Image 1 (cartoon, rainbow, N blue to C red):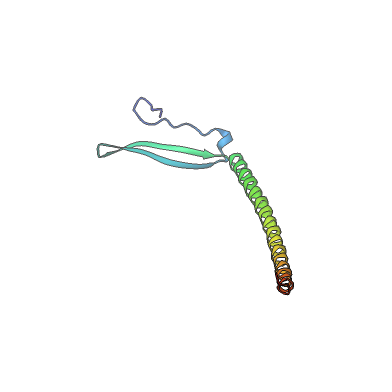
Image 2: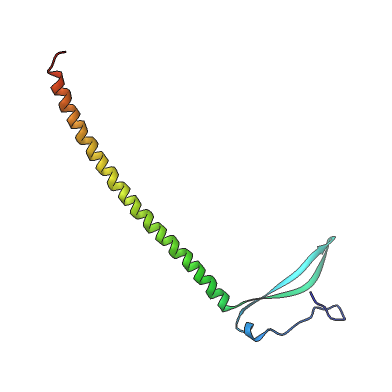
Length: 109
């Protein structure tokens, strides 16, 4: 941190491009063997351009996730239909097996 000749932090003007940015002051301090030492404050700026870009990135991730969910739902529906068809086929095969068992039982070997 830059300091003046008296040891005080140097305060600079905010650049005009950051004038409309979100501004937060964060105090800086450290513990020096039990004694709290104040280092001053740091000003943090987040521009609306950064917020918009981040929002767009998050939106893209959400849209991608939604698309994956839709594909997953579609795949699950297809699997459910396939399982239902397998159950119907198994039931038909069980009936065929019963008929074959009855027919084979008539014959003596």
